[in-house]
Length: 215
Image (cartoon, rainbow, N blue to C red; front, side, top):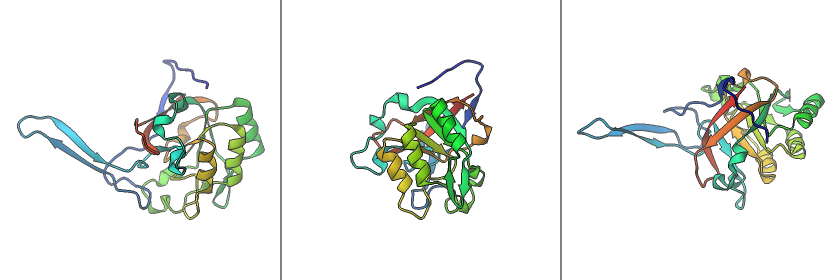
């Protein structure tokens, strides 16, 4: 793992805000937030109801595999490391690596790859969940061969919305971590930077995260 922190670094928030009426994946529970408090003095507590895949979140192998590791079993070092952002070539809906991008990944060996599609600009539009791009199974296999270990994307899924989740199954079976619903990837350089992804401490297959880049 490569990680370099300094006071001169700029912090870029890669996280959608958790809020009432925010978009959620079709079939997932809606986010509900309500303030509750005391009747005799001003003490505010907020009641929150949300699914584990709400907003910007991380998937672990347990998401698809009964014996896969959940968040409580993932070493903390996996959530902090070096990252590279890339824009992949698109053929139809599918995203593919170009040869020079694979060479770059081999040379720099980041802990994380973040794939910028620009689809986060459609965050509140209905087609955000129906028309988004997806990683090709060939590209997913290339990531496995490189042994990077973590992938993120600025749309709702690395898989197409109408399939059997082949990319999830391939990556998670190889102990990958998957970040979905990232945002602001256009603000990142295509050089190494530091990524911090802090999920809630849950014994669960997934959780919302606060994802930030240090550049």
